[in-house]
Length: 356
Image (cartoon, rainbow, N blue to C red; front, side, top):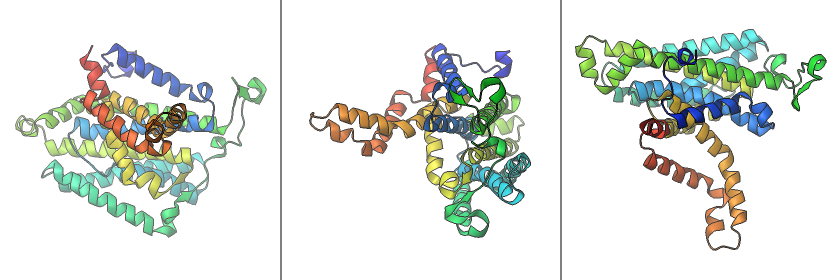
């Protein structure tokens, strides 16, 4: 059953399997294992970024296509939910219509970009996506009447997903293992369930005949064309699929935050983060998205705190407290990235699979 669920793509490494199981258990029971606003928020972000990074890996790792517009598609899904919730009012129908509309619009835009640029060479696709993503980010910032401009949009989700909604009073007296049963808990499991389904769908895609042809095109597109595969067709289809799933992950992000803005969904900084997560986890290994997103989001949220503790522990020693100052956390994040690339050139998953 597990083999079928994972589309026959098992971890192929005991250490990797153990890591994935630990991450799955931690994410599945995060509200109960790590109660607290910040920890649950971190777990939700990990779930969303796993899907976002996996969808980008479909393009880069499996298709060999470099895109700089993934945050644009991510933002389309987020803004789709925000706009429908703002204009239709709070309700699950607004969330569903916003998510589907955002994904459809992202797929159509990806189709247009792909048809214009992927017919020539993949590098032109990268250049065009960079230009289009920059133009869309500027447009969203300037259309303040529709998108809220730089301030973004705050919207309301259904009452059942709000912290004021309580359930389980008769059965569990409103708490389970010390955790309040409220709408925020339901929202977390909506994010977790949605992310799990999208990840399994991506796993199915990359292990299908379509995914194998995509890998053949990545290795040698001329040979793939020569034996009868329409390279443009496969590349454009992968681009549309990747864009639609990125938009759906953006919808989940908007539902979790109940806010969208250019900095939270369309920023080039997020695009660079996605690239780093793919490289750390391992390109062309869909499980690399799980490892890369988990390590990176944890480092973003807790490295500064860890350095504060280390700095206070080394007080009295020369130079070390200054080097370990929490203000230098970005420097150490860069050092950790360089070390990960040096010791894991094929990514963590690639290295672990090579050691089995």
